[in-house]
Image 1 (tube, rainbow over the protein chains, first blue to last red):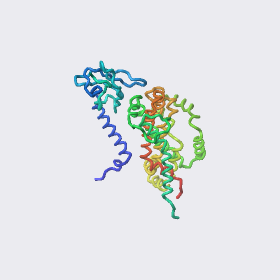
Image 2 (cartoon, each protein chain N blue to C red):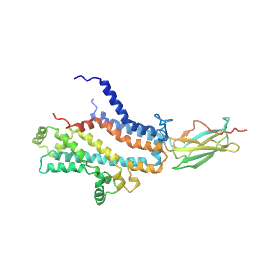
Image 3 (cartoon, rainbow over the protein chains, first blue to last red):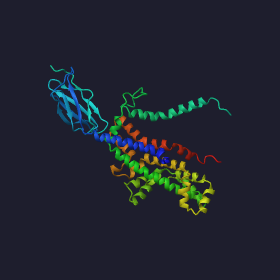
Image 4 (cartoon, one colour):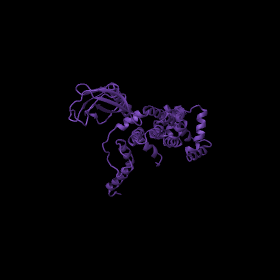
Length: 127
Length: 270
């Protein structure tokens, strides 16, 4: 059986492959866009910080604006489920420890589910 | 005669090609880094390259909408050029009274820049009720004189006996163009597709004049809008430029063989 010539034409292969890639990417994005950002907060010695407040700041045209805040659990874990941006910053606050470094989190698509590879870290250590 | 030092010729050609590609490389390099382009000494390789500038472009402005608008306008322009220019090109292969005058008129029109005729074009488009519409955006690019001459050269290269034979078989003029001349003129079609696509894709002044709704803007207008939003984000701006450039480069690469053949057909006799 011979394949039709148009099927092997670059005018079919290139747009077809592009469409497939775009569709695949769109499908992946659609199934991983619950807006979840999770991570862990640690002090200067690397110990988990329970009860710390974590701020979610969303990138605007000029500045970053607060879009949500949550508290860490007993193991120092936090979780946002309402992120709707592709570029956010995270910052933790805790009594006696001050503020952590501000972490820039850039995502491949809006509301991408992500888990921080590195914990949010305070400079100070808990007593 | 045997050529001496063929490697030297190739080395020079490669060097010149690389020099030509430097500006493109610089755009690409800046688009994947957040560097200050005025930094001295300039870096040849990007420091900490990443692709997030492209994500910023996608979300900070309605990029998908601009892209869709550009694709629709370019598709209209390409279709118009392929069809209307073929008809005009075929007409110019015929001998009729005033043909030379029409040819001279076409050639003289090529000397007039579009900026000089943009006000009449705007008024005509307005009278037709096509302002702020896709058809209005594509209207001045639906037929271009250069592309008409490309078709004319391609049609004249087809043996006259072939057309005469078709005519004897009772084939009409319309079918002669579409069934005989067009399949034999693929390089001319490719040239028309590439040129009309690139011209319509990059058009800035005409869309700037006739588009009134931000949702109807094309990519070049979006680029200007983006520049006004993010003056200090060079990386994102260059990422936008890359995203605007890529489709026309892909179309060119797909059709380059036929394009070059189309431009050089008629350059030699025999």
